[in-house]
Length: 107
Length: 120
Image (cartoon, rainbow over all chains, first blue to last red; front, side):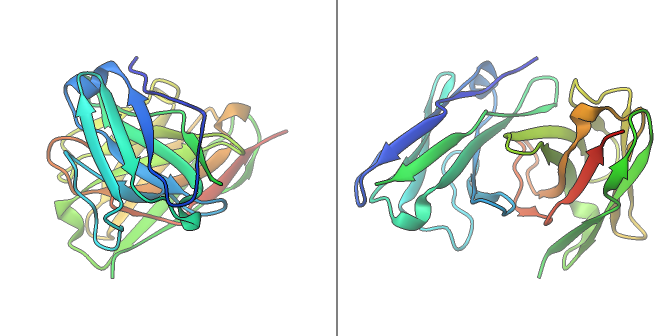
């Protein structure tokens, strides 16, 4: 079955730029989507398809990809960006798969 | 506004069955695919199942295939997850999520989740 691999934890200084990585074979066929989850809350979509942000998501969130790797970049991280971030993709069997999640700490 | 409201969670013994519901409002139900996603306590998100907008296709994660069944009632604007042969490892918050995509999956609205606890 497909897998998506994320670094378990990443930290960034307030106002600096951080990139979160998601790696997996399914990303060669389908775009990743990215979700932010704060403690005790449901996930929130922050990026989908090539690099689209839903209404209400700040433009400091952006995405890119290369080969089997997708990236979520936060440019000018804010304290409220501290959360868990998950990537997700469809796979070639039409199943879905999440990455293990990255805990972002804003210092 | 779009709302997804899950219900049906609770405490169940191993081997038991439970049916979750997700009632949708604020949009045209029949034009969106729907997914179930779960999250075990303190763990990450796990994709469970999808049903396409017209019900023509259903897919399941490896850990639930053969035990869980996803379905939808377009007259009641409701998504279901029938869970049979429940195991302790099925304990999780179960979310329903709407999918507007026609190619890659993504989830633009989520419910608040319903907790399923499998324990003797």
